[in-house]
Amino acid sequence: MIRLFLIILISLPTLVFSQEKLNPRVTLRTYVGIPKIVGSQMFRTSFNGVVETGGSVNVRVANNFFVGLGYQYNNFVVNKKEWSAAITTTSGSVYYATKLQCHSGFLKLGYDRYFSEIGYITYGLNLGYMQGTYQKVIPDSSDKNKPFLSPIYTTPYLQPEISFNFQAEKKASFSLILSYTALFYKFDPKGPRFNHIGEITEARNRSIMSWINIGLGCNLLFKNKK
Image (cartoon, rainbow, N blue to C red; front, side, top):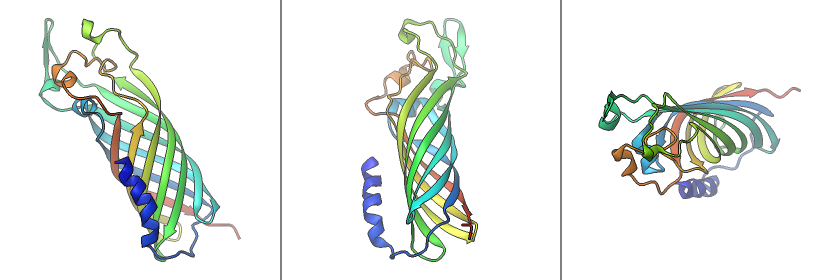
């Protein structure tokens, strides 16, 4: 997936017209979508993506190259499969409603390329730092979940993205966004206390935690002062 994004970032500029139009100096870019886990099979077996949303304030620094600072939020819920409906233990049936919530700050590097008077493609790369927290964790004292881990982890991540933007008016444009998030972190089932669940531990865990996101965005274009 990361190779696909690199190919797109390198090749697409040759497919569009030369540009003359520039975006305003300052832009506010927001988006919302549904993340789809594509990395670790163990992570996919454990959780499903519910929402990814975020935004950034950006400043054009040269031509249509821009830099910005942003915030991102992700929410994942326990996978709705048979294993999460009920696990039978010596104490009876245990029902899981575990969540993974992630808060991130990032530095955005991007470039806007117009292919018409109202349409432009944005190529971006977000360099961020994420804190993930497992919530509604069911305590389990089995040896398989030892040593017990903190339900909170932190990790840097990379997020290449591409978006197709169309101006609805002079001060706003709307976007279709595709991004790929790659964490420098491998899923550990001991964090949410899942290491005793056979369906999860039987899954492969060779890859890092990662997901793709297809979403919709809105960009506010602050007009330059004359």
